[in-house]
Image (tube, rainbow, N blue to C red; front, side, top):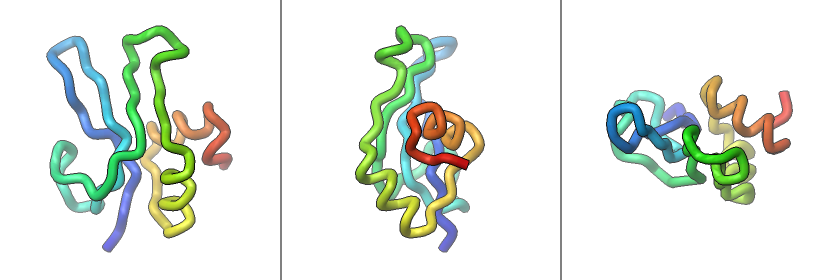
Length: 83
């Protein structure tokens, strides 16, 4: 089973927000998540845009979960996933 850390979309048209979740790579974007790791709200002010559970993220990265490109960029910005 290949596990990804990716975004799950919520909100309305032109007002999206996302949950950063761990999912099996084969499940649909808005399908069932294994675990929720944080929130990403791109419309909010910069200090309220991202909320992360750093411990859970590091645990899943240690288990071999691969972040998507967008999630990798968010994690790099917060010095969690550096590569």
